[in-house]
Image (spheres, rainbow, N blue to C red):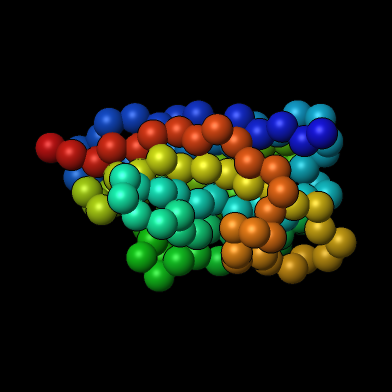
Length: 126
């Protein structure tokens, strides 16, 4: 079974940067599409960023477009989320999720994914 472990969450000031990592074990990530999701207290989980199995296709929520970058290192079996120009509204628990993919399709809904990490907390505050 694919296992995912997120790391890199921290307390950061507005305008700062963080890089989240999602390390996979059990299966090679080059067979999986990945999504990053986040959930703040009292709010529904929302999709943040998505990457195809090859890493050749990506997409972002409008709220993070231009500030966040998703990337995939299949050799290291790890997906990254580089977050720049962080805002207080980015505060949330961030999760990575994976699903086996046969092509370069991006998956946007949380119910499309069947493997989830435990999450890593990002807090943006002065």
